[in-house]
Length: 231
Image (cartoon, rainbow, N blue to C red; front, side):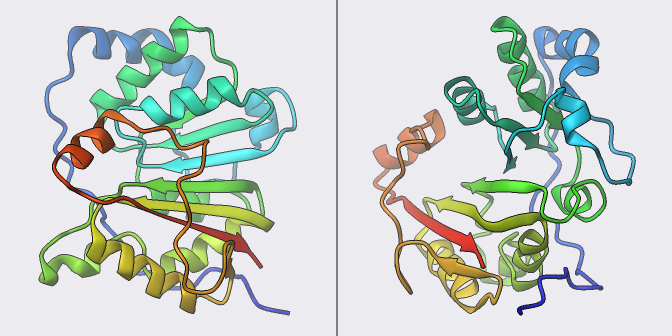
């Protein structure tokens, strides 16, 4: 049996630069009015998500949800599953909370915190049915490549948190990062390619084309999806 325990000394990945920007009044009001409902304060202890959501349902994690456009759509069109979003940038969290409140969403909870720490300390082993990382910062410069979130230690940590046969869905519009993702995932013992060794996947129907993606496509960028099942 393959050991899916996370590495003991996971190098601290900082796959983001915390450029908060200025929150609009509406985004700030979202924290005042809706954080108690949608937010989870990081405590560094394992969470009981069934208690958080008031039911037992498959749990989907999206890391780095940006402005929340894709997470809002997915949770609305997939009410049978619960969604957990992690994002460090306050304006995007506020925007998403306003959208969730507008439709009285019940199946989404959010962290405004570092995803590695949430995975290490808050999400129990095997708790996730699916994890999604769409369009993470590619860190274009070669000297910054080590800051990319998709690294061997990180995907080993993810494997320890995803249930057997659960799904990991990666997407990027930067070809060198797509190649890096494929290299890391094909070598990862906890994962198997859902469409065949060394293969990229067709864009699944559940990943909508976001404003960010449309902008990239207009600039001539390609988009690469990778789907892996937990062994």
